[in-house]
Image 1 (cartoon, rainbow, N blue to C red):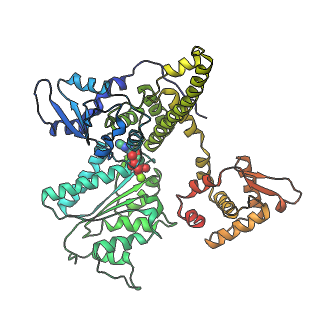
Image 2: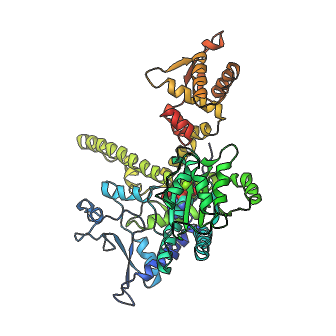
Amino acid sequence: MPSLIIPSGEVTETEKRSIEIQSSPLKRRLRSHSTTLDEEETNTTSISTPLNLNSPEKWKSPRKSINSSPNGKINGVCNGSEIRLVKSPRKRLANCFAEKPKWNLKDSAQMSIVKEALHVSSAPLAIVCREDEQKKVFEFCKTSIQEGRGGSLYVCGCPGTGKTLSMEKVKQNLLDWVKEGGFDEPNIVALNCTSLGNTSEIFNKILEVYQPQKKVNRTSSALQHLQKLFSQKKQPSSKKMMLIVADELDYLITKDRSVLHDLFMLTSLPFSRCILIGIANALDLADRFLPKLQALNCKPLVVTFRAYSKDQILRILRQRLAALPFDVFNPQALELCARKVAAASGDMRKALCVCRSAIEMLEEELRDTNSTMNLVQQENTSLAQPISPATEFLVKQETNIVRVDHMAIALSRTFKSTIVDIIQSLPQHQQIVLCSMVKLFRGSKKDTTVGELNRSYIELCKSSHIPPAGFLETSNMCRVLSDQGILKIGQSKDDRSKRVTLKVDEADITFALQGIRFFRNCLQ
Ligand SMILES: Nc1ncnc2c1ncn2[C@@H]1O[C@H](COP(=O)(O)OP(=O)(O)O)[C@@H](O)[C@H]1O
Ligand SMILES: [Mg+2]
């Protein structure tokens, strides 16, 4: 298990710069939306919360009574969907954040606002730390639209580096720009390739949008239609551009990679009006297929999303939390999370998940403390004894903020559960063996024999036209899986009669393999 470094109490450079979170996009919003009441002292500014958690009813919930004033404002700072900040002089802004009211953990409305702010599906209005990448893609698409010609981009980076989120934002910005500039709105196909039934279905999806009335007949495929369309000067369906955003492009890899090649080649046909943004998690995909695309004269512009650094993770977390009217995390706890996640993967999704799990640690602690306190109180009343040092400690602890110790536990739990990672990195045939076991154990059955498992494995391979390994190899695979602590194999003279049980949760296997279409279909 990776070691955890608990930071010392000193305030770091990043924390000193906490106010920086308000700069750039958010700050610009502050300025542009300002409502001047008193230029010198009470110049208040309204900003919409950058997260979609601003239902006024939630903020005005009467259950917020501890932290709210009767008129619905929380300490006079927040109201409805807006957070009102004292903007000038600059110091006051910092003070405003320092003086955030306390978070009331027992208020379920506040709790759900906090959890929502940290949920991966909550998209902030301004995406910090990805400005350069977004600009590159935006400028590329802008030029293509201005010049009315096709082109392609290949966006790659590890999971959780903000690719999908940023491309969604670029798409919106592009539509705004097109409207403002009086250009024709492009036809858009935005899809996640994992949702396709088969790889070449992507061409049908494109054709459906480009020429909705066109019916594909048996003699020519959707791809052929598109190739013909983009090769002729006069294109029937107006002169509209076409923007294709293909997320999780890795799923289009076929043995000969023809689908990928054909897709990119569509953008370089003589009269192509097709802009392709292909997004992939695999960094090495570029090395594997770019040379070929270059040879085919359709090499895309590559935009790489690097893993987030500690400072970037911290900045993103703080930006998301800045929308909340109360402090949820001790600053050192947030920093610990950012440092640890950056060192492990730089995956923002993980950072958010750890933060949410740290909140759950605090909730758990609160529940335990409450029951202990109740017990102690009852005992003290009956015995009239003084409060013990342990109880005093519980009372004195910061009870309404996520501390470093909560974060440390959340981190160790997250990074310890590597079983999913192990399963995901197994060779394909070992994954098929595991998949067969999950299928075998669907009912009440909880163990099998190597022989029975082998039959089930062969069946699964055959149903998917994959040549199965021989019995000896299957038996070896079981041994390897057993060495890794995934299976348990019993003793028997005859290999086929050895009993096999799973040592990991079936749900972990399903979860680990669900990203691969083949397994998803098998496990349905
Ligand atoms: N720059 C960012 N600002 C705010 N949240 C982010 C940022 N980057 C990533 N996230 C969060 O992490 C989640 C995962 O990002 P995503 O774009 O889906 O990653 P990828 O597509 O690279 O795997 C997003 O849903 C979002 O909640
Ligand atoms: Mg993505």
